[in-house]
Image (cartoon, rainbow, N blue to C red; front, side):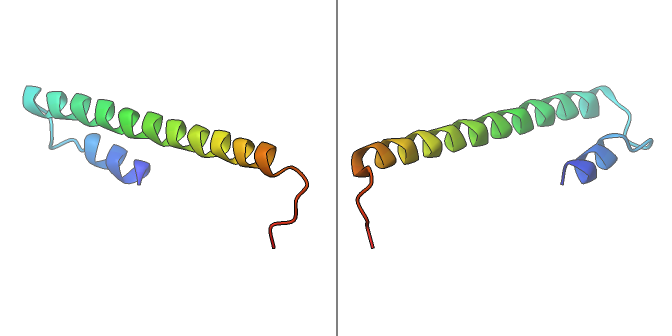
Length: 61
């Protein structure tokens, strides 16, 4: 996906101030999505660790 976006961003026929502004906004948006995914992953890990601590060695089957 990232390669496709970079390919579009680097298209020679798309050179203008408006396009440069849009590319900048896209980059910021994508970085925000990546940061949100990392935060969500960290939250899942923390929740998993909490569950492991609460259950201990109990068999949940």
